[in-house]
Length: 292
Image (cartoon, rainbow, N blue to C red; front, side, top):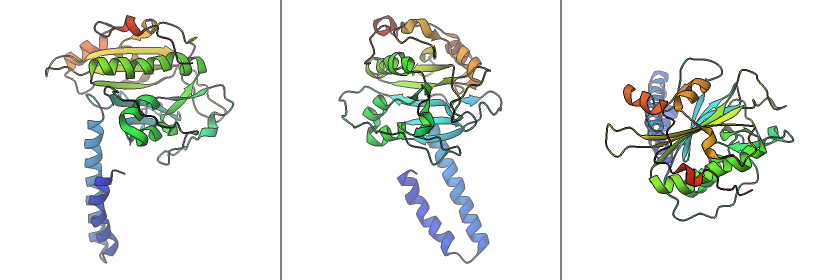
């Protein structure tokens, strides 16, 4: 819990526990709850660009618990045991931090299912980060890094995707896009088709993954610059990134989520239909080698 919020809540909690009057305690508890809810809503909005992803219609496949972490937000599906979307904000990494990578992933006490490190053992799938360890740790420090190792941030990815093409894309966003544009928002997550396949532990296996990059406009009322990808699990890993450019409209169709919902409708419709790569210098970075 945010330390500032905790400091505000402690006096109210003391009143609750000291009170001999149940009604007073109930009213104070209600005020505490309302204050926490209002604070959390404000914090959530500040951790996203043009609103958090919204379900287009309520279904078990798109229902999420929203968790706020150091450096990123996640919409987690207890039904699919996957993060369905993750959003984070990047800025240039001017000096790289040397932080030791945790040896194990950690179950998230806030989730109901409590997926753990061993649920992926001998599955043939990597534990794929959605909020990336490298970028989050360098921008948000050790606490941010540890939060990226929560299992609510993890989804099954094939090794050729996770260790090669996905790793390449994460390097490009952190070391190129964030440096070039100074202000970069990212929304990412899995895509599932109608045929459900799972790990032995029950974790559902995605068929593909999406990335949405957003550079806010300098002038109010202008359109943000966007670039989107849909990348299947079946990649070899050495393909050009240009092969997987998509539109936000297509990602919305495949995921059931509405992105950038707080933009004015004409602006939202324009940017979400775009597959343009103009201004992103994508050809310069589309074929960079992976580290592995």
